[in-house]
Amino acid sequence: MLASTYQPVLTTSLRRRYLPNMKEGENFIFTSTATDDYNCCSWALGNDEENIILYTAEGAYDTRLSSYVDYYKSIGFRECKDGEFREGYSTIVIFALGDEFTHVARRKDSTTWASKLGEWEDIEHSDLDSLSGDYYGNPVIFLEMKNP
Amino acid sequence: MKCSFNKEQRFQFNSQEMHPSEKRIHSEGYFEPPSESKAEREFNKRVINLYDSLHHIVIGSASLAIEREFKELSQKWKDETGLYSTPMQKVNDTYLEIIAKGKPYVPLILKDLQKGGSFYWHIALKAITGQNPVPNNDLKNSKVVKTAWIEWGKRNKLI
Image 1 (tube, rainbow over the protein chains, first blue to last red):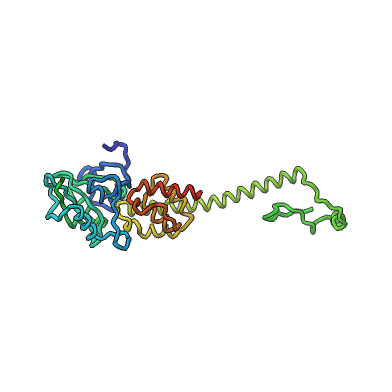
Image 2 (cartoon, chains in turn blue, purple):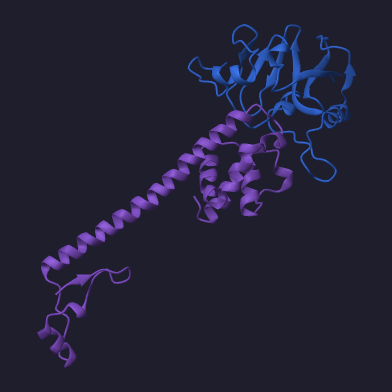
């Protein structure tokens, strides 16, 4: 639980500039303080101990959408038609701008998604439109994996 | 007798401006520079202090200007890319501008890391210094990355 005095790094001003569809208290709430201990890619797997960073075969940083899809498939996810919550499954959604990966969120329950916003806070959001726009682009693929 | 200053000696007597009787003594080899009077010592001391103060002001101003510039650029970069999760997206135009500033920025970046700044600074630090104290396998661990660079900065007396 966040302290009521916590001042988010993702200020209202920055939200208006980059994620204008986010309305605190309406379609999202902050659930953590800002940290770079983990990123959205690891948080989508419930991992808060490291940043998942993909590299090309040549060793360059990889931001291709296809590489992130392949990565999640390689650990057991498979494509699904929508992001509806299914008991016993982990569901994630990948955002992209064109062919470039930008963000990944995971289903928390039937009404909520969980996201780690870059190096900043974790949030829970009620829809995917709240993160859609010029910065993250749009949700482009849903993936799910049966929980062990 | 007049005196003048130069960078090395700070204070020196100018024989060209000596009184004729002093010149004569000097040319005959009997001259010994007069010892500084109390007033001269005091004067010299003040001049040296003034010189040091001006030096600190000039150097300090330049340093403050660089710090201010770094603060503005780094805040701009954080605002622009804080929501991103991949290194390539972090390296935007502002980040490249920071890298282009070169070595004067290294201590400032390291100090930012000490205060909990972004672990993505490691890309700029590597680009500017040509060093890489973080094993590639540890680049996913922000704490390890920050600690390695901070320790590197201390070893190289940059922070």
